[in-house]
Structures are given as structure tokens and as C-alpha cells.
Length: 198
Image 1 (cartoon, rainbow, N blue to C red):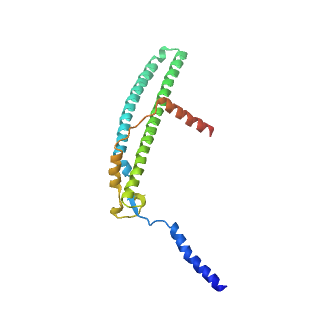
Image 2: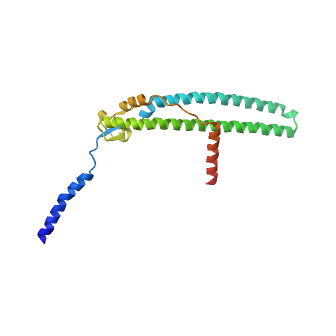
Image 3: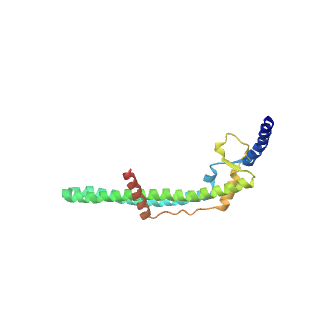
């Protein structure tokens, strides 16, 4: 009986390591890439340039609106003594509505800019992941980590320049698209409705 148990145990110890071997993970071959690679890319720079142009346009538009409001406010103050209280109240309400409309326009422009940036940056990030994966495979690595998460590593493991070079080739620019005012208004209304429901 002891001999049978011993033989069974010996057989199981021979089978066990081969079963473990079949499930074993490959040896890690690590490379690193800097998180700033994305920020240095030509595509992200093209996005920032487009957003700066749009911001300048918005600033010009809002400055013109602000100047009109200041002039109207001054004119209203100057004419206040010549108007009845009721007439002044009506004019004042109309003026305050214009102020609210400008504030609403400013909020719409802010959301337009934010969403446009998020959508465009997402495209760059997706391209970055694809390129990083290709560079990792070409280097014979099976793991790529952000350089900033590694305490120390030889420069030979850093593939940031190669990733950046390939990213710039595969995606040199991204066209930034801005949602329409009506789309933004709907989004803002939906967010406000959700906040009120909570």
C-alpha cells in the first residue's frame, strides 16, 4: 500500500510542474515611455494652436459685447432722471436680460472649447497607444510602462523618442471640431436637469 501511495505521489509531483509550466507567464521584457511624449506631439501642438485661434476669436467677440453693454449701461444711467420709474425699470430689466444672454454665451463658448479639446486629445491618445504598442513590439518588449512610474532605469529602456517620432508620422495634425451652440445648449440643459434630479 505504501509503495502504491509513494508511486502515486511521485507521479503527481512529475505532472504538477509541467501543468504549472503550461500556465506560466512569459518573462517580462520592459521598456518605458515618458508621459510628456503626448504633449510634445505635433498633433497635440496643432490642437493647441487651433484652440488658441478660437480663443482669440471668442475674446474679440466677447470684448465687443462687453463694450456695447458698458455703453448701454452708461446711457441708461444718464437717461434715468428723464424717465419714469416704470420706464426705467423696464429698460433695466431688458439690459439685465442682455447681460444674462452674454453670460450664457460665454458659458456656451467655454463648454465648446472644453469638449473640442477633449475630443481632439482623445484621438491623439488613441494614436499614441497604437504607436506605443508597435514600438514596444519592434523593440522585443512585452511591457511598456510610463517612465515617471519607474524609480530608475537605464536610458536604453526609454523609447520615448521613437514613440514620438512614429506618432508625429502617423498623426501630424488633428482637426478640432466645435459643437454647435444648439448642441451645447442641450448638453448644458441635460446637465442642469441631472443636477436638479439628484
